[in-house]
Structures are given as C-alpha cells and as structure tokens.
Amino acid sequence: MGKYFMETVIVQSDSGFGSYQCLEYNGDQWEDKNDLLSEIQQNVYDFYELGCDELPEDVENILGSIENQPDLVYAYRTEKDGCVKFGGIKEFNN
Image (tube, rainbow, N blue to C red; front, side, top):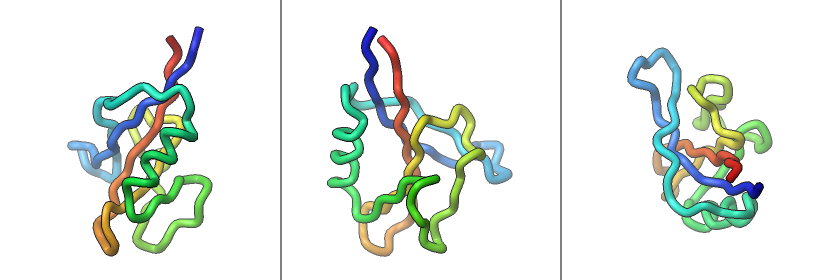
C-alpha cells in the first residue's frame, strides 16, 4: 500500500464568515511531499507554510477555518506585492 501527495487550492467558503474550503485535488500524484513542495515554491514569488513559518502582517493564519483541511496548508503570492492565495497538500493512500 503506497502513499502519494496532491495539491489543492483553498478559497473562501461561499458561506463567508471567515471560513475556507478546498477545491478539487488536481494535478499529478507525487510520491514525495518535499518534491511537490519544491515544485510549488519554484513557481511562486513568496511562500509561507502555515503553522511553521513566521507570517507577515498581511498573511492570515487560516488554520482551523478550512473545511476538510489538508495535511499541509500554505500561503503564497505569484508576484511581488500580489494578493495572498492559499493552497494545501494532502496525503492519500493507494
């Protein structure tokens, strides 16, 4: 029985009230979480792992506010001074 990792985008929930939800897990299945993290970090401007990294003032810690929260949650920007977006990585078992 093997494991693999997939990424998702996290957006504000339609219900609002400071809650968030994961969109569909998409993309390739990765055998190594660190390889997937490296790939993500190479394609964004800023990257912060929530619960591990110190966050700048404009990055909200949304841990605990995400429906079906993935194993790892991160914040990122795709360009300097761009808006903050959230994503996640979940571990799956075959």
